[in-house]
Length: 161
Image (cartoon, helix red, strand yellow):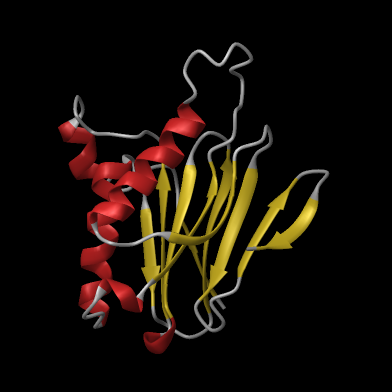
């Protein structure tokens, strides 16, 4: 089995059998997962912030860092796999928790989720399943072979979305 670790701001994609794409410790960050079942392709972006307006240099070096850059980048990666229409892609998301923000001053998690949804809508896409919000971190993995997404959190166990 090959493991592709996706760090903060990174994007991982694969259509290689036996591969798992995984990211760790999502707090306010969002894991946006694309699955193209007919092509056995999966992809994941680890989105840290909603928009790249003030940080274009970082957007180029870490295309998954911002929701407004990550989604078009994932779409291009999937076109390279042979996806012809966005409707061939299944989208799911997790993360976007409220971590270390008791006064809800910044709401980065919520803003990340909303920015991702807004960009998805721009491309006529939408998440068919999500596990977002709350106040705990998540680790998420997706299998190329099955498209199965597993989410886990310390003290909370493991579940699928």
